[in-house]
Image 1: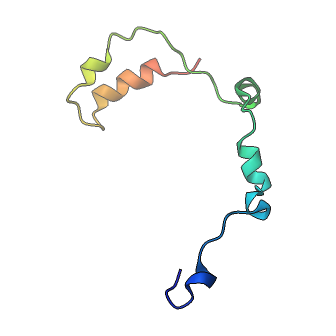
Image 2: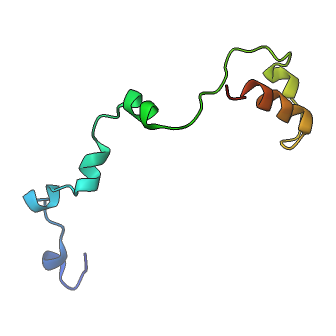
Length: 80
């Protein structure tokens, strides 16, 4: 909007041409099929529920790069 041409630069209400979505936007709103995505993936499933003797609380206070904390995740997140 400008003071010089207030009426000519005043916003207008959206019309039908403003309400058209591109194909990539429409595709983003389609239903995500998790089962089909899992079947199409070639990734190995992580092993879960195994007891490695460590809990999350055991990592309290450790640095991000601490090797003792890393063994907790790598042993419990190993692939089959």
